[in-house]
Image (spheres, rainbow, N blue to C red):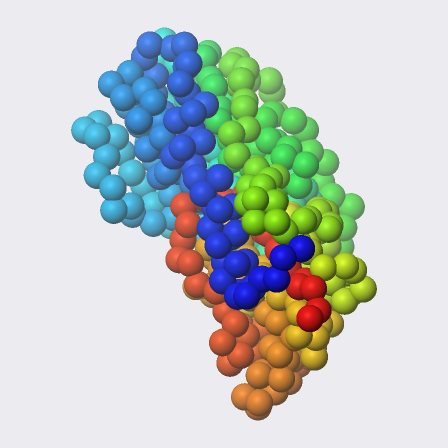
Length: 407
């Protein structure tokens, strides 16, 4: 492997290549180049909704008769006449999210029965739009989601609990669509690219069992007392296709590195506890040979009662930094492809063998920052946080690391 003069710059360039490979506008436009339907209504929901809808506009143009876009923030882009935008909130649903759910229901009701529906779905849709079952208040909805985000549960258990109280999730959107034809393009942010898990599966009417996990009494009471969402089979069947996924981003990194004579030593899925994953990755790097190390997926963080700032990517990065402390030839970049890591405005962090020294020089103790879920404070002090701003896409998280040959 050739000598890399600026490994931090190298990793950031590869990050940019990964994000370009899963650009929602380009991925959707490419997927729709041979779309057969002449007239269509477009519903875009999720963190990548704006970019996906613009890709549909580029491919279908005037064939789109109506469109509804539900995304986290108001876009700079001006939409065509007849297109409707509704902002929801993330990661916790709010009053805007309930309005977005109502907008979906009324918008579908007003569509011509014969008009084909194209749904553009991406992660984040679970919080951005919600139609709760009767009796499920916004306060209960927020309390449930706040608890789930701190629980450390995997996405499948989280989605099963969310869907229990929703008329939109677990095939609810498909039921609302009626008899019309439905097609879905999906940007996947979930392990195994299971479309039924993206945004809690609004187009996937599969039955999910209440998970056998320890839950607070108030949540069990809601489960026992509130009505269940409809479970009958919808009249429509959605044809779903994934147009971008985590592996596409990893492929782009590996291909770019190969062109620059950097070989990929390891490529694995990313899951489990963020701190443990960081420790494991750090050990691989210390013990492994020089080259590129790639990991993709999503970890979790079990939050203490009073958590600080910084979530799974920064937690992972700080744990990895402890494992490689004092090693000069290793750099690790962990980031969320959506550009947002939990309750911070940062995407993640880029650490090296001197990160821990810089953290302690600032008067902070890395172990304490991890224990209090306050990795952002440590990494900010070290000058290692990565800020991209919202990227407009969402294919979960990526860790890419570079070990350089010793002189």
